[in-house]
Length: 521
Image 1 (tube, rainbow, N blue to C red):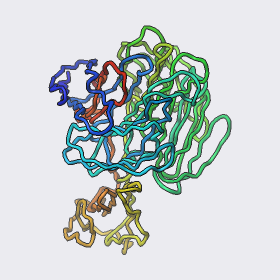
Image 2: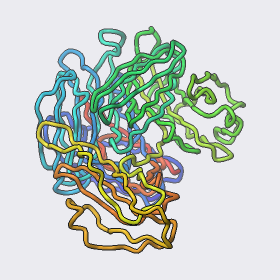
Image 3: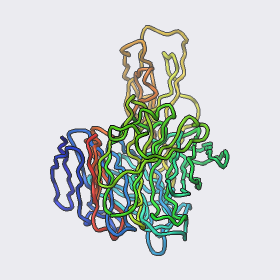
Image 4: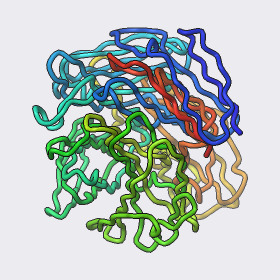
């Protein structure tokens, strides 16, 4: 049993819900932010046990979309917006929600992939800010001095342009520090095409993509995207530096259902279990889960206690370099709860998508395991005295250029003899390493020294000290389940996630209400 508290200051809402499995909470459409600029439309959700939250906008079919809500512990200070070009007089949007007081935010605006100045503002907790444009806001860069929730999308789009039916888009963006380098992208069966937008976090990114049509490589610059169109088979994507992959539903095949937008799970973001509820707002249509797993692990996957092979499934092979994987599609029934897991604890990917009715669609990953690439410490095998490399660090400007992501400084060693233990300089978030005067004795011979550099709107911040060499490769890992706090706005569906989830805000007009689905993990 979870005790879940939902707070929405705009409506003077402060309610507690008891959730035994999953609960649908309906929120007023008054919390939908249709306006430009600042509003008090944040919603905070907290729980005393692990929960997950999915959010569904509810109105006419063209305004139906959903997303997985990220907890506050999974938020960041650096984002790139993903959206699409809106039709007619409708808008493309970026929505920011603050989880702390005195949060300073800068949006470096990109419209139709061209820079267009910047805007800056300060938010207090529960406040939200929306930037809207009749042009595509994709590639806009959002930075802040404190963690924020960022949602982007569009009020109404065709994908591809001028083809098929229209649909709103919405997605809770992943902070740059949690981007990763390997992806297996399932198709949206039975649709025959899908669209990808791939974003680079750093200059010098080499992205490779593979499909039945062949193997290709593209060089990418920081903050820029490459758009691809996939078919009816899985596509694999790898990169030498972290990237974000966003998948769009393609509506050019005369099949019922509209476009949608969702984050693609990286292979490193797979987990071994998922609990979810399938939304039910229409009497027709279909809902499916796409499961990506190693061939050797298929036998251990269970859905509601039954081996996956006992369900009616469709299986597609995955191409190199993940030829040992397959993608499995299973239809699931609306208004039902599901437990998807592997009996042996093997990790696999899963996302839920649906075509509920002839003119609606949604899609989102069911859960994510996030690894902080900015704290993915690069450490030598031995170190006694550390020095900073002479390479010039990337600088940060908060007016017109994107803020650089954090990176880890590689340490050099003046000794090749391993001591009984190490002494390391111990400082946190200092702007000048030379000012670090504290010395820390490491607790064991397996601990070594590290330095981490993180960029912020005010300049580089450095942290140093001791760290266990055996766990240094996952200095900060976040599962989107467990102790989380969420902040959001509008109608959302609550599932079992964590008690410290994040702020979310709805950004579409003409929505009657929204729902939160809360489920126990």
